[in-house]
Image (tube, rainbow, N blue to C red; front, side, top):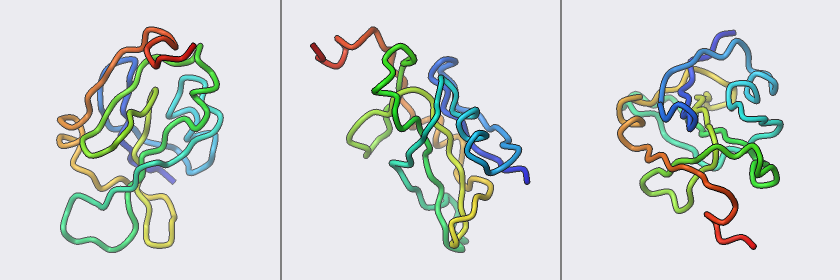
Length: 128
């Protein structure tokens, strides 16, 4: 099962399409990268085009990155989302039953929406 996803890459400061070879956990961890071993999906998006058949597209990001400061590379912000996401993320689609499928976002809109930022250590977040 091949799945088209969008990767938001904070190391390369790029947004680009990737292909996931399967829908298993390790594939998601590897696609997110930066030492990811668990993920969360804090943002659900309705597909870009009008012919919506149910399901949504989700941003999958490292769920425990704040516990591993040494793995933090940077992050990004999105309009309308109240907090930044740390390190890489992937956008994967799902059908109305929750099964993974190709993303349905306009990648050019995602590219224009993402604002990358650098990370210079815990002091960036006022942690003592």
